[in-house]
Image 1 (cartoon, rainbow, N blue to C red):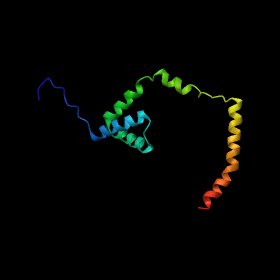
Image 2 (spheres, rainbow, N blue to C red):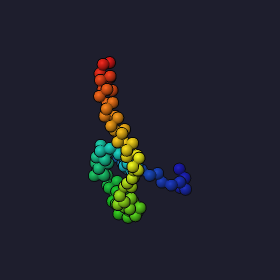
Image 3 (tube, rainbow, N blue to C red):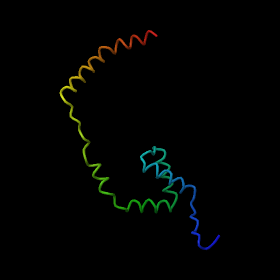
Image 4 (spheres, one colour):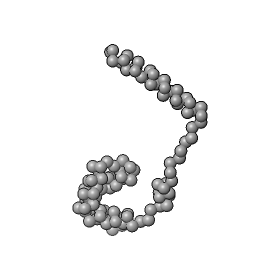
Length: 106
């Protein structure tokens, strides 16, 4: 190995697993089991703990906070769509028992 090459970064298996779990959490795909495993790794590994503390010290972007504070947009329905919805629900209530009895005969 020549001296010009960068040093190899040594990482443990728990650090590798933490990186995978961190990406899942960031993407919003982490399950409760994943978060529990991530918490255990943080408590065990000092390097991971330092990384998490550094991430917590970084200020959050204001767009994230503003998105959370804004109420969801409310869609207003027109009178015609409200009447149409009423008749659709009424029709479904009338035809639902007939559909159930037809499927029960099979």
